[in-house]
Length: 306
Image (cartoon, rainbow, N blue to C red; front, side, top):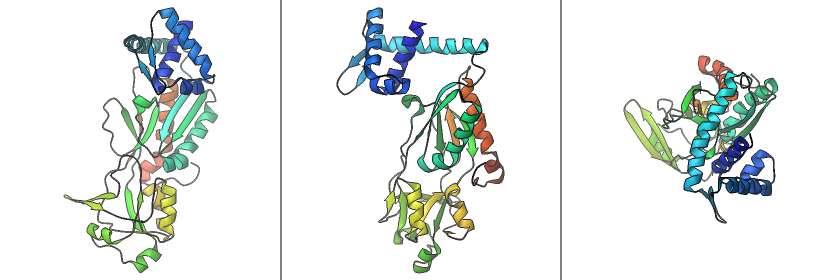
């Protein structure tokens, strides 16, 4: 079993690209990881990693050991499932999500999930940058909009659209635009997130599509900050319905250009589907889908605990 333990360690180092990161995830010190790797290479009689002060890279033997070893680990996991050891969710799950949505709507589901399955260690990573599930070693990623990666499976969590809106105080001082082009005359609060083109909003009506270059003296990578600016009457905001629905109901924000639509922004959970998917992944995906069922059915963002 030492060989399987060493193989798991090596896979962690290769996935994270750093012995320090692997040590942190495994709960040991970097020198322990370095010594175990050196012992593994000595036992195999070959170098698995090229080490420099700036990065690690796999040697040809390292690539062979990792690729063939990954299949061995998957077969071992499948065997444990057949013998009953993997029927209950257990182990670590790394999940990535956007800052605001992850904080408000994913974190509560994960809290309840770990209460139900205390043997699962959930690591939630919130970021405004795109996440590559395969290359960055995540088990699940919450994504807005369409997914082009054929290696991944997607399950719909919630239907969602982005809305243009502004505070009544702003619209009183600056009459609402009648066409997308008129947005250029307004202060448009911009959120820098993901790989979206900075300062450009895409709107469509039927077959007409407009790419509008907007400007603002206020922009942020945090949607909550941008929302507060809009509520203060500082400009027009483009934001997902889950974030502004409450303020639209309370008339603190008013919709703008309602006959124009934005690109689809439905919410998906993305993961790699395998023949023997670990119970921890399968059950968490099912819990996430179930938690958002009222949203899918009624088209309303959930408010508070659900």
